[in-house]
Image (cartoon, rainbow, N blue to C red):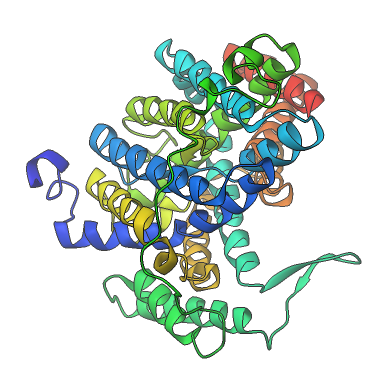
Length: 437
């Protein structure tokens, strides 16, 4: 095991990898409840959505661990599942089988781009300053997710965002998780982030934040598997309807852009914590990561789980010491168990994971010193990415704003020659993407 996963070479061991895998799982476990809740609006039975979510995440996370040997975990991505439920199946009226066919199509399209080398080439064409900006923006995004889940920050009509109710149970649990993570990490306690999650969850019981499970085992429902090949609401096979409808093909393109760059940003964020990001901002061994992620998107559509993608919460496990694919395999095993034990697993409140996510956000801010803020071409587009990712609550939107801004600034400053050909392509694609939103 040590030889296959290169544990000693990467300064890790089996115990650390298992702990990191559990940390990642707990940080991601909310998807077991949230994804089925969203997909139910598309007409998918909740029990079937839970099965598809857990089994899809388990399989693709284990595959990621085996083939990439990096601490990356996969699950149904937030954002795209909402598009499936509320746009494709909601306002547009398509059946969920057709919506899942669209997801499968975009996953296959991304896989083709990876196998052709285009996805990796675009990543290499990104200026170093923008790569740092993506890492920083992801850090703020992760921290924002944690603070939001704990109710520490809330939406406000007057000020857009405000401090939450300091007397609420979720707020208290979130603050406790942050304090525990910082204190335990400062004391060099192994598994500091994991302990922060567990203790915060326990404290949440008397506060009414952590529910007591009413059951232990839940039945599995595989009725969504093979969704694109099932008859949709129109009576036609979902895949046939998706392929023969131009509007749906445009949606597939838009979703592909989102998946394409979300994964790029996530890989960089986890690589930063997992110590496989080079000094010039490149992710080591990126190709197998991109291949598995692309396959995962298609598998998500086939299973009826929405697009499965690499989760930015994987950085919590990497920050907790995970350095190899063994971390991912452990996370995948927990997802497999969760398919049967979802009533118990779902009792871990998202507020309890706040500390881990906020602390990871803090760690990722270190890249800010590597950016030349006196150079407008380096500084301003990077700032647009850093601000755009959390402020639009979208990795791909923030990256798109930075890419387009970089091209504009390069043109007006007479530095057009610094723009690599694929940056032109990426900026143009993002412009089209924004116009289609």
